[in-house]
Image 1 (tube, rainbow, N blue to C red):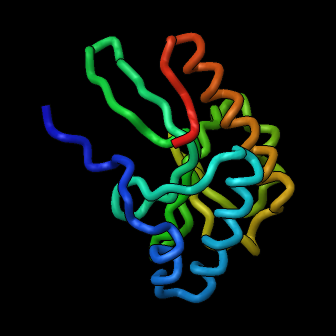
Image 2 (image 1 turned 30 degrees about the vertical axis):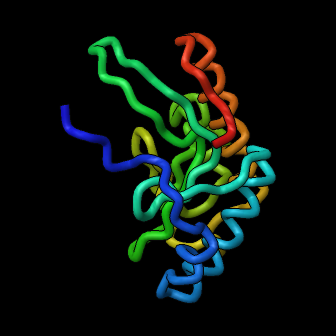
Amino acid sequence: MAELKTKATKVSVKDFIANVPNETRRADAQALQKLFEKVSGWKAQMWGPTIVGFGSYEYTYDTGHTGKMCALGFSPRSTNLVIYSGVDAVEAAPLLKGLGKHKISKACIYINKLADVDMAVLEKVLKAGLVTTKKLCKEKGWPIAAT
């Protein structure tokens, strides 16, 4: 089995964000760090080279594949902000309608810049995603904690 690339590191979150080349993306990353810490109650930690994560959970799939991942996170990529919210897109559809300009995949929300979204709704989305993740971890018996 291949080693997971996305794992907790000792890289400084502050240094990572300070080195985001786009000024708007850097400011958005600083704002997201504060919001994610407020929502989760956990301090930020780097996961892999580009994900700022909060908390962690250990999982084991039915296939036997195991791993560890941040419970919430974001990545200030060059093309957009990627939000790893844990939210179920179907369940959260009514909430996501009020978010503003975004795209969503099964696991991520993509935002061009924070000015495009309603920050109060984003906070609610993150809270809902964390509830969903905690519920899944409880059902599966997967440990979840601050990292």
